[in-house]
Length: 118
Image (cartoon, rainbow, N blue to C red):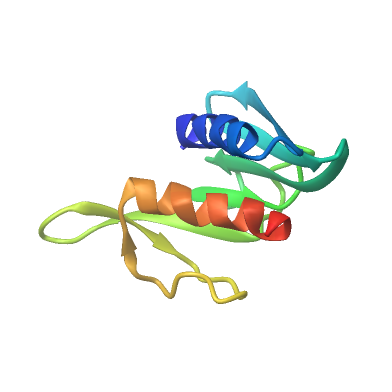
């Protein structure tokens, strides 16, 4: 997921000269991404896994890198055919618990980050 965000921020900036993005890996389980328009922060997030309070892969709409709260969470689940991610679907018309591929999970979180840019 970190690679997806890092590459997507680079691509976003190359296609939109007024947009800049920063990616910062905090540790093996956590990273932040921030989007700027005209030098002003427009959107930010921290994505992390393995918090002491909950499992899964969480999204927080802040770049402060804290892991004590989140806006969305993906859990890793399995059926008789494959592993998949499942979103809690915490409002805003997000995924409704559908089975997501790992890229689909990254895309869901990316959409949440760039929502304020659109």
